[in-house]
Image (cartoon, rainbow, N blue to C red; front, side, top):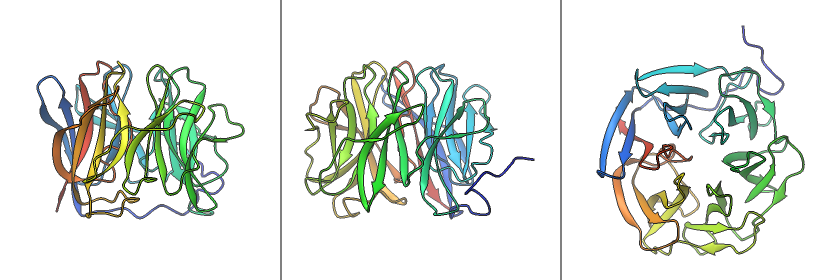
Length: 297
């Protein structure tokens, strides 16, 4: 029997039961989508493992590993942490899994690390809410969105734990921080200009630069390809949502732009939103990425 740790007992976040989830793969060379699996429950936020063999996703508070060859899912044992959300990432070497999970004592998300094969999680961010999005290429630093005194900003701290450093302080929500493969930038999204837009900055928080300027869309969660050339992100149409919200059950788009900047293009249109593309899901070959679309029951 799995042990229950402090703050995790008898509480799990509310779960939806009214949708089917389609785990999809988009091929950048052919511009084609493939549904690799369909689920009769909510699954969210696939990460592609560095060995190219699996996708890691969350569902009903747990984390699963989906084998791309057998098309089967297996539960990753996260010990006493049983309320995982859709902000999880893998270490650059693929040996560790960083997860965000709600605690029962205050129902706030915190960040934990455990072996990718499963095991007892180690608490990294004692302060919550904290939502993990990025792991530096050298494996030494985590980047996450933290709510401190009602304000969401980007923070970093050592992967071994320690003192967090705040990198943004612009008005409104700053979210989704993720390192470029060379470690030269942290990409993120910010609502500071009125709509949610894609930004990037140096790893120390300097030179915060707006990368998208589409006044018709709110742009979230930029993900840089392993070769550093491409960025994909998810967009909500202006007026469909509050600029600081990324809810489910919306007509959304995945867009692409060069990492150096430039005009975006739409890759896919579908019903989704929250859970579709929250975390980096690029394949190691930089040719494909995974996402989740939904269909109401």
